[in-house]
Image 1 (spheres, rainbow, N blue to C red):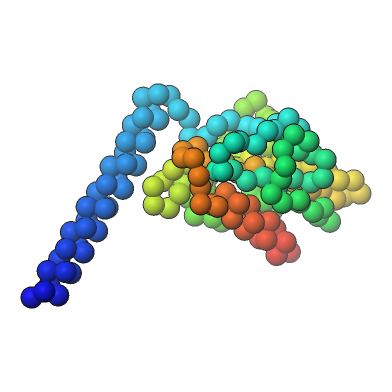
Image 2: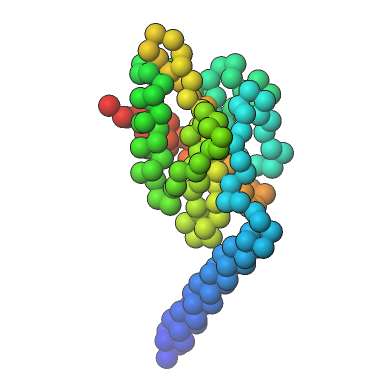
Length: 171
């Protein structure tokens, strides 16, 4: 009987947690809708980018591109043209769960994505700038940041690391 009560209590707690998670997601969606908040924070200019004071962003840049922000990773030069690197990066991004391309109007020269967190469905915005590096080579800068919350438990940094690793594995 005691085991049954424990299992029942755990199931009730799980059900309550599921309701609270769904309610929190709906509250965020409602606040965003009422306040006119977009699902992203708009495009960035890597040449003038300044990092946030909160620990909920990550940055990867080639040397000299992000003059006002210290990157978490230095990106390498790829032995492919910029347009091919852009295609590969877009493929890597779209392969991730709950990741969608964002428009960049007027054309801003960036690839832009939003990825939603698995449980709370909070949006993170990811901007990618593909840069020619001469002789048919290219490099890139990636800035990933959370729209909601102060910290991100390393999610943005892990995303950039996954995307760069996937680019390194691409044929």
